[in-house]
Amino acid sequence: MSLPDKQGHFGEFGGKYVPETLMALLEELEKVFRAARRDKSFQRELAYYLNEYAGRPTSLYLAERLNRHLKTLKVYLKREDLLHTGAHKINNTLGQVLLAKRMKKTRIIAETGAGQHGVATATAAAFMGLHCEVYMGSEDIERQALNVDRMKLLGAKVVPVTSGSQTLKDAMNEAIRDWVTNVRNTFYIIGSVAGPHPYPLMVREFQSIIGKEARRQFLAKEKRLPDYLVACVGGGSNAMGLFHAFFNDKHTKMIGVEAAGLGLATGHHAATLMKGDIGVLHGSKSNILETKDGQIKVAHSIAAGLDYPGVGPEHAYYKKIGRAGYVSVTDKKALEGLRLLSRTEGIIPALETAHAISYLERLARKAPRNSRVIVCLSGRGDKDMGSIKGLIK
Ligand SMILES: *Cc1c(COP(=O)(O)O)cnc(C)c1O
Image 1: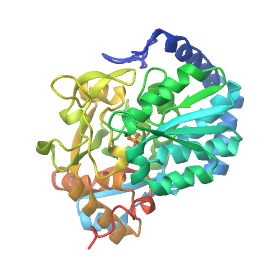
Image 2 (image 1 turned 60 degrees about the horizontal axis):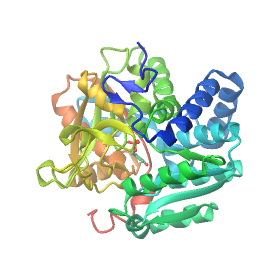
Image 3 (image 1 turned 90 degrees about the vertical axis):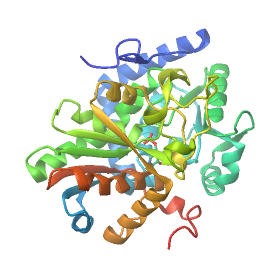
Image 4 (image 1 turned 180 degrees about the vertical axis):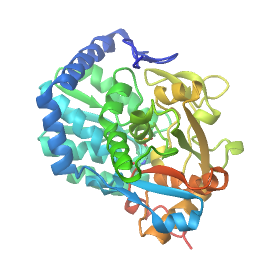
C-alpha cells in the first residue's frame, strides 16, 4: 500500500487538521501537485533546474579517512552540502516554486526559523521572478542576522513575527494566516515534511531524489544495498528524502538522529520522536513536544534547523511500525561530530548534519564489522561559524 492515503494519513498520523477555509486551498494544491507529478514536461523542467542550477546529482562519497577513524564502518556521504545554497532545502523550494508558476501565482510566502528555508525560498523566487515574503520570529531575526541580509539581498521581504515565543512555530502560524487571506495570488512553500496534507507528501516527493540517487549510486559501487541509513531529523525532510527510496529494502536499517540539546533529562531539547506525545501541530497529527496542559513547548538545539517542537507525520509512522529507529545526540556531541568530519575529511558540516556524524561513533561500537552506511550530509557548515565561535578548541 502506498502512503499517505487519500486523506493524507500515514496510519494514525498526518491528515488535515485545518479550518474550513483552508480545506479548499489544500485540495486545489493537491490536485495541481498530482497532475504535475504525472506530467512529463513538469518533471523535465524540474530535473533541468535541479541539475543545471542546483548542482545535481550530488556525489556519494566514500569517506575513507573517517572510516579509518571509525574502524568498523564503511561510510558513504551523500553530499547535499554541495548543492547551490549549501543544503538539501533547494530540492524542495525549486519544486514548489515550479508548482506556483504552474498555478499562475505571483507571490511566494514561507516561514523560517534559522533562515535556511527562507534563503532557499528567496533564492528560488528570485530566480523565477516571483515576489517573496518570509515570516520570521523577531527572536530569530536577531539571532540570524546573516540570513536576514541574504534574504533581503535576494529581493525577499522579511516579515517579523512578534507573537508567542517569536520563533519558528509562530512564524508558521502567521504564514498560514497570510495564505488564507491572500490565496488568490499567493503560494505557501513549507520547508519540511510537516504541515497539513498534501505538504508532507509533496516535500517528500521533492526530497526523495536524495534517496533515489543514493540507492542507484550505492548499488553501482557496492553491488548490494547498504546496511544502515543515517540522517538528522528536524522536521524530517532530509531524512525522509534519503529513507523513502529504501522503504521496501527490508535489510536496510534507517536511523533518524534528533537533537538532544542540553540532554533529554533537562527538558531543553528537540527530540520530538523520542520524548514527545501524539498531538496536532500546524495542521497535522504527529509527535509534538507539549507541556502538561497542552501548550507547545519551545524546543532547544544548538542547530537552529533542528529546533522544531514537531516532526513530519511519516516519521511518527515509521517509528510506530518499527521501520526506522530514532536516537538523539546532544549539542556537545554534535560539536565533536562537526570537528571529526572537518579534521578527517576536510568537510565542515552544518551543525544539524553534525548530529548524524556524531552518531556514527556510537553505531561503530555496536554494528557488525564492515557494515555499509549512507549518511545524508544535509548541509555545509559555513552558516554556523558565527554561532560556534569560541566553542571549537
Ligand atoms: C533545515 C536543515 C535540516 C533540518 O530539516 P529537515 O527537514 O529535518 O531536513 C537539516 N540539515 C540542514 C543542513 C538544514 O538546513
